[in-house]
Image (cartoon, rainbow over all chains, first blue to last red):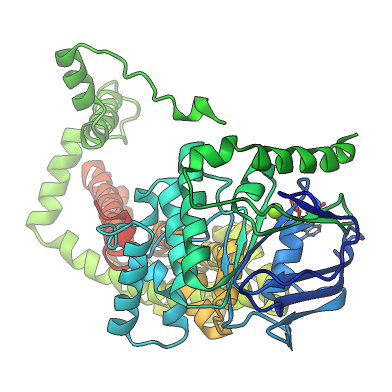
Length: 274
Length: 272
Ligand SMILES: Nc1ncnc2c1ncn2[C@@H]1O[C@H](COP(=O)(O)OP(=O)(O)O)[C@@H](O)[C@H]1O
Ligand SMILES: [Mg+2]
């Protein structure tokens, strides 16, 4: 096997157990299809497994249905066919074990940072002082200490997404769903985010489902990448980058193993462009 | 990589004193005062041409204002005018927001009620007044109804639009964090709608002022309407225009107050 990348043409092959982890998937997508009103077929019979405690990325060309699949997993929109299992239970709507990080941040402009971060807890009826204490912890955690009483319009794009992330972490969900969370921030901030995301995955024990259209980003942060084809979407390959992390980030980005995976995915995606 | 986004805009070098003058000149308060001054100067000029013998200058009007304030006419007239205005406006605001929110949340009620308000908004009020007096007589009720017909449609329709325009991503955010329907209405839809609802309220208030004066001129002369039509009939134009000016100033101040209330109570993020 290629030392750095395990490519599989079979989308649904059995995964070898990841070292030190249970092979049990936390999220299972079983032949999900979605046809929007108006006849646009976004997904056609997608099946995928998301291992627990890992970061799995949905990567594919723009408009291929990544957001659609993520929102179906989140229970925000119904699928036309198939089922989604989270922790073995079928998804019928949003649930406390899943939290969403939105591409456009979805912050309430009339609410301060701390109220935005605590909003999930507020909806669950957690008492004011308790939820503010929890929110403060997560605000500090994403590096926004001192900004608790600011309003979203006073923050940069990168800081707003940190608020969105803190809000998702504050409800302590097992699965964090992130829809192109870094697409609206500048490249430097984006790289910093990627480092921090890796740290979260390593330390939180949560499972992350991440959507991006950037190959480099996917390879850099993912334990597992599901490559989606053009609409109507199917899984065209599963890739496990197995990058040696924990070194100097700049070195990793120049590492030949990393660059090989990027190149291999690029070759795969290329023929969708023609 | 988007280097271009990282490149800071070069600060333009300006001469400091010139800049200070320009900053002062474009200060909102200065601009507003300039705009008022221009209108008043134009008025004074038009009065002096004279445009018409029935059109007093601004200074003459101020004299008239002094006179009707000194003898207590203006104050008494305001109290009388405020009566139908306050009742009509309060009813329009309460019913208008409630109906608008209901229509925004519940589509069948939009189909049921919206046409009424669209028609009411488009209908010429003067043409409706004979019907109103026929139905409600010439007393307070007819005047209150006139105020409502003027003020309510814009409040209802703005509220409806505001509720419908709640950003979809905020609604999705709410449901992904398990908001119940009532939580999402109270904590997301209404706060998101409040700036546009308040915009409707400001328009509604302006319309209510117009409505109450129209009612006082067209139904039975009372209050400010009486001061206007009485002074017109005795050709005391400075007093007539003073009454008109005073109601305009009052309505502008009232709408300004409403904006202050909105920012203090509902828009913490807009506070300086
Ligand atoms: N609400 C909708 N109604 C109709 N078509 C939609 C809707 N949302 C998305 N689509 C279509 O479904 C396809 C997949 O969309 P999306 O999941 O947003 O793609 P991605 O996130 O991969 O860019 C696109 O072609 C898009 O036009
Ligand atoms: Mg998308």
